[in-house]
Image (cartoon, rainbow, N blue to C red):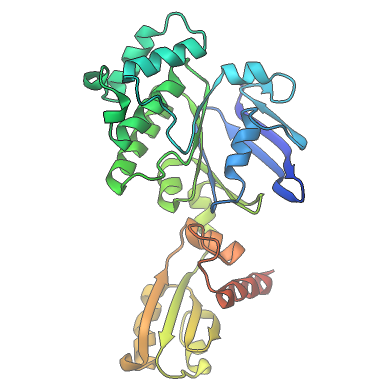
Length: 327
């Protein structure tokens, strides 16, 4: 296995007038967990399709497990596993029969020992003879990951692996994904729009928006880029802007009507000063955003990852203004 499990330069995909992936450069070290984080429609799934050979590149080059995606697509596919966002299983087959079918499709001969090991690892041994239609959503997802690991790939792609799962099941699957990476030594590239998922699982993260990488690094490195807290304040009366700007720790203030967004060095130190300067009955709502991957995305793009249109238009202009002021 090469030092870099995945390398891509100028990765581009154009569908008619739409550029889904726009000249992306990507380097994923072998043995790690790499996350593509961004809202729905940002281009995450398209990147996976390009790297797995499910879609042709419009431009650029890429290698996976040391093989060129354009010139050696079969060698690439022999060394990768793929878990789709939607579970793809035969509900009329048992768990073991789904493994058998996967082995047939991949022309595997000595697969049974591996199949037993995977069922045990994912705690599905007792349900191996039951139809998949009787499995819970979490069990179905586990089985699909087992199918992707049956041929012992070097790299596994997971497209929104926990979408549709309840929080408890999602966190359980996080542990399994971490185990797949560590215990099987497999490089994992996953896509997600869950902030906490990327933060919990990934050694490195690329934040993507409109087909472009807007930030890359470890979660800690990315969060350190936003060396401030954001305080969103809604008031019942018109508050004098000069009062807010004069408060200790305030670096920027923007307003739209009775809603204020303040960039402060420390929310903990700022809030007591705020309550001294603004009467309690004037305050309708306060929201504090601490440095996170969400605030990184918000700071760069002016919108939230979970919903690209969830931040009001005036907020987007506010964050755009702050970015220009820092440049």
